[in-house]
Amino acid sequence: MAKKFYVTTPIYYPNDIPHIGHAYTTIAADVLSRWHKLNGEKTRFLTGTDEHGKKIQSAAEKQGKTPKEFADELIPKFKDAWKKLNINYDRFIRTTDKEHEKVVQEVLKKVYDKGDIYLGKYEGYYCTACEAYYTEKDLENDCCPIHKTKIEKLKEPSYFFKLSKYQKKLLEFYKKNPEFISPDYRQKEIINRVKEGLNDLSISRTSFDWGIKLPFDKKHVCYVWFDALLNYYSGADGFWPADVHLVGKDILWFHSVIWPAMLLSAGIEPPKKVFAHGWWTFNGEKISKSRGNAINVDELISIAGVDALRYFLFRETPFGEDGDFSKKMLIERYNNELADKLGNLISRVAALAEKYELEKTENKLLKKLKLKEIEKHFEKIEIDRALNEIFAFIDNCNEYVQAKKPWETHYKKVLYELSDSIKAIAILLYPFIPSSSEKIAKQFGFEIGYKEIEKPLKENKIKRAEILFNKIK
Ligand code: MSP
Image 1 (tube, rainbow, N blue to C red):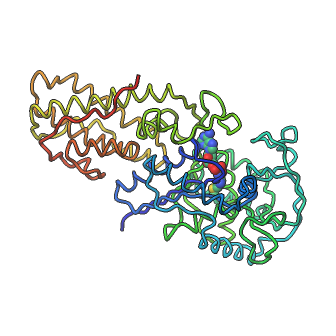
Image 2 (tube, rainbow, N blue to C red):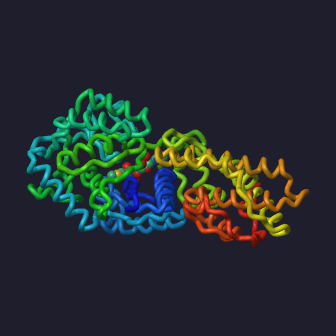
Image 3 (tube, rainbow, N blue to C red):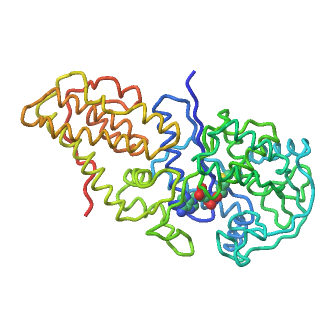
C-alpha cells in the first residue's frame, strides 16, 4: 500500500487579503505536498479559512455586512492568490461548512460527556485581534503584547475545558513522541511552559453569537480556536492523523498544547507533528497592517515571478527561523542563482546537445547528488537544507562543464551525463519551481516523477529553448 501523507496550513482569518505570512506557510505546504506526490504517496493537502468569532463579526459590522456575506467576499481572494502562486491544495475548508460545524458539535459533546467541560465564569483579558485570552502578567501597559492595542476585560459566564487535567498526559505524550514539536528548540520552550502548569481554558462566549452553538447549552457559542483547530480533523476525509501541521511560531501553543489535549479528551489520535516556522520582517521592520507594509501576493509575484518567490522564501532563511524579506535580496538571488547557476547550465547544455547529439553512458556525475540526504531533509521538514543540497549539485554540474569543456572536444558522453543530471535537478526542484521544472522536462524530454531520477534519460533530441530566467536589472 502506498504511504500516505497529510499536510495542513493554519486556516486563515478572512478579514483581509492574503499577505506574505499566509503565502509562506501555504507555499511550504505545497512544496511538501508536491514532494510526497512526486514520490507516489497518497497525499492530502488541506487549507482554508477561519470564519467565526468576534474578530470577523466586528470586521463585517464595520462594512454593514453579515459575517457570512463578509467572508464570502474574501474567500475568492484567498483562492485566487493560491492559484496565482501555483498552489495545488486538495481541499479548501471553511469553518462555516455544515459538515465542519457538525463535527465540532460532536467533539464538544464527547468532551462534555467525558466530564472535561464545566460551567464557570470567565474574568480576565481578551484580545480580539489575537482571539486569545491573557492574564494580567502577560500585558504590556494594559495592552496586548502582540498587537499593542488596549485590551478588553471580560466578565461573563463561560464553559471551561479542563486543560489542567491534561498537563501530565501531555508531558508523557511529548516524551513518547520526541518529534511532535519541531524544530527542537521550540519543543523545549513549550515543554517548559507546560511544566509550569496549565489553566483551564474558557471555550464559550455569550456576549456575541457568531459561532457554533454548544450542543449542551445553545446560549453559548464555541470559542473560535476550539472550533478552528477541529478543521484539521473534520476536513481529513480519511487521512487522519495529520502527518504535519505547519504553523507560525505565534500559534504554536494552540497547536502543540491545546489541540492535542482536546484530542486526548475526545479519544482521537493526535497528529504526528507540528512544525513552527519563523516570521518575516520587511526591510528589517515588523510586518503589520498599521505600518502598511503587509506586502500582498500580487506585489510579491510582480518582483521576479512566482517560481522565483517560491524559491526565495526557502532559500533565504532556514525554515523555522525568522527572515527578512527585501526586493533587493529576492532579485539578487534570482539573478545569481536561478539565472546564472541553473539557467546558464540548462542553456549551455541544451545548445551543445542540440549541436552534437548525446551518447548514452553511465552517469558518473550523478553520484555527486546526495539524494538520501535530500530525502532526510524533507522527512524532517528542513526545506531549506534540501534546497541547499540540490544547489550544491548544480554547482557540481557547472564545474563539470568547466572542467570537461564539452564544446572543445565534442564530448557526447559528457553531454549525456549533464543532460541526465539536469533531469534529476529539475525533478528535485519541481516542488519549489513547478512551472520552470515542467518547461525543462519538456525541453529535455522526461517525465516528472521521483523514480525518473535514476532512470536513464531517453531523449536524444534536446533543443534550445527560450531563456528560463531572464535577468532583472
Ligand atoms: N485563524 C488562525 C489560525 C487557526 S489554525 C486552526 C490565524 N489566522 S491568521 O490569518 O492570523 O494567519 C496566521 C498565520 O500567518 C500564522 O501561521 C502566522 O504565523 C502567519 N503569519 C502572519 N504574519 C507573518 C509574518 N510576518 N511572517 C510569517 N508568518 C506570519 O492565526
